[in-house]
Length: 89
Image 1 (cartoon, rainbow, N blue to C red):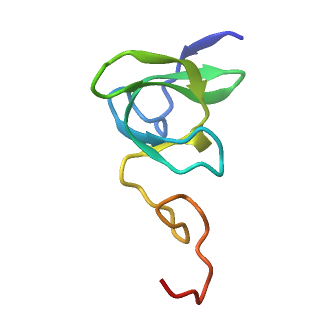
Image 2: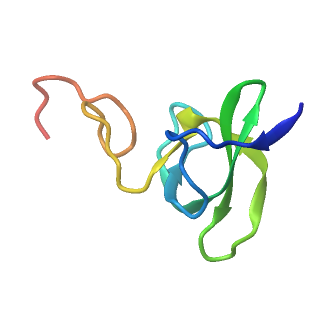
């Protein structure tokens, strides 16, 4: 797979504080930042690193597994699961 640095305007730039998850049903984990945005097979992916260590993880994460820190999607609870309408907390 050939990768190159991504330069699209919607791509999170290096140094952006992010939350990541390992799969779609996994809760979001904070304490990471974007090390590099890459294009692989015409898809944007992210090399990430722990904010305190500055060492990049070897995997490339797809955009569904990375979000800006503190961003919450409407209709989702803090774990990333859909809230049920009309449910009481």
